[in-house]
Structures are given as structure tokens and as C-alpha cells.
Length: 349
Ligand SMILES: Cc1cc2nc3c(=O)[nH]c(=O)nc-3n(C[C@H](O)[C@H](O)[C@H](O)COP(=O)(O)O)c2cc1C
Image (cartoon, rainbow, N blue to C red):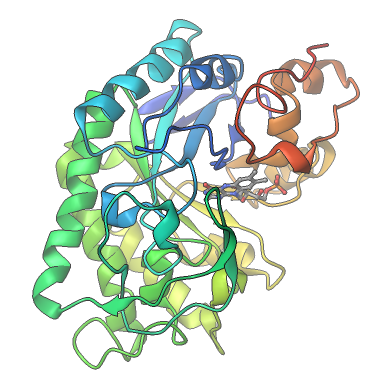
């Protein structure tokens, strides 16, 4: 068993266990329409077993970063169609990562004037980039009313239908990195006293209901995955004891028979704990090189390995792994800048 071993994930037979991580690249227009260059960028990486797209907003409310894309109107869907066509033309498989930012946003990055929504009215510490005003503190969110939660879940279901209409093979629920679902999971961001806050059972409710709705919208559980980053403090998430919550979530999620669970390693060993708790296909990412990826697969600690920044810099990563060829180093300065530089100009072997 190694990174080149074929694998079935959900409804798909994949030619290897090399997964391209979801990575925001800030190459959409100000209305959340992904730009044509993205077809070249993703198409060049189509020999990955699976590509997971950058985070894509399910609604204008869920859009938070400068030049990040959405999938809630016809122009956005049509633009994504060019990307999925490019990947499919080369025999690839691509899931759309559905990302609602919740409280991680600033008004200068948004297309609507409404205050952001979150489980509770607690502002996240930290700043984010805006093209108009430079670095700005995250906006103060308002707490979702209990009666509004079904409409937010509906946005995820509609985004799932839109993603499939755009030609994506499946969707990934982004419940990591401090965005809306992770805000519900966390004791620091979720101070609700209703059925969506308090106990672990209540804090996982939003995520489980959202995954359930996405599966119903997709028409097959084998087209829906989810990403978690237990213990990650990014975006002002603090949880004194995260593992029990994530174990409860992994078990409830496994019962839905999803395509996969994707865990980002954060240094607290959650990938080992969740391997035990989650009866299903496990994708693990975070700082992997080929050698460790092969060892992790051979030891049965994961079913596929997710590569992030390495994939930014190496469109032909699969070929480089096959030949044990040297890798290009990623240029962090161009991760989120507009245009082709650092996006589609990394050299091939
Ligand atoms: C430029 C960049 C953008 C990212 N954007 C996202 C994102 O939109 N959604 C997400 O779940 N993770 C995002 N991540 C995290 C990656 O998916 C991955 O978990 C992380 O980079 C660790 O893997 P690595 O060490 O192989 O890079 C991003 C990472 C990078 C480098």
C-alpha cells in the first residue's frame, strides 16, 4: 500500500491516494465568480486521485474573504463548469468544498450590507485582508435565531445541488479552521443555550444536520465528505477539551455513510483518535511529504493523504512522486494575490 494504490472513495474509483487539499487562492472576481484561469490551475492537477476545491461560499452571507468564490448564482455556477470540465477532460475527480465563514469576515469583502451570522454574538479576535482597506478586524457577528438555522442549512443543501449542476463530482462540508460549522462545535464561539449549544451532543447538531441535508441534496451519501481540524486554534477557536466533541461528531457522521472524513493534523493526535472512532474512509493531511504519506498508508493510519502547499507549487506532483523528483518550493507571498503569478506559472518537470 502506498500513495499510488487505487482506492474507492464514496461513489468513485480513484487512481491513487494523493488528494489535493482545499486551498483558497483568491482568484475570483468581486462578485464571487471564479476566474477562467482556475480551469488551467485545477486542470493541471487532474491526475490527483481526488481534488478538493478551494472553499466556496454557499451564500452571500457565507462569503468572507477578498476575491473568494461563491456557488449561489448562475454566473458563479457557469464559471465553475469550466473548471470541472477541465478536470474531467483529464480523467480527474473534483469535489467542491462548501465554506460558510460565519463570523470570520469583514464588510469590505462582502457583497451585502448585513452583519455576519454566528452561533453567538462573539467577535473573533484577529484581522483579515481587504483589498479596499488593508488589514481589518473581523466584524462583530449577530447570533442566529433558532428559527433561522434551517435556512442556513438549506443554503448548504442548495449549494450542493448547485455544485453538482456545475459538474462537481461531490461536495465537502468545511467544518474546520474556525468557520461557521467549527464555530458551532467550539465552546469558545458557541454560547447558545438552545438545542445547538451546551453539551457536545448539542454543539455537533448543526454539523450533523448540515451533512444530512447535503447528502439528501446530493442524492447519494457517497458524494459528500467533511473536513475537521480538531484542536486547531486558527480563527480564534479555543476548546478546552475538543476530542470528546469530535469523537461524538465522527460517530454521528459515520452513521450517515459519507464518502469520507478529512482530518487536518493539528498536533493533538486527533487523526489517531478519529481513525478509531470513525468507521469509514479517512483522509489525513497536514505537513505530509511522500515518504511519511507512504508510511502512514502502509500502517493503515489513513486511507488517502491530503497535500496542500506542496500542491500549490507542484502541478505535476503525482509525476514527481513517481520519479522521486525534486519539488518546487511554494511561494507564500503569491498564495492569495490576483493573477497567474504563483498560480499557473510553477514549472513542470
Ligand atoms: C494557500 C492555502 C489556502 C488554504 N485554504 C483552505 C481552504 O479554503 N479550506 C480548507 O479547508 N483549508 C485550507 N487550507 C489548509 C489546507 O487545506 C491544508 O489543510 C493545510 O495547508 C495543511 O496541509 P499542508 O501542510 O500539506 O499544506 C489552505 C492552505 C493553504 C496553504
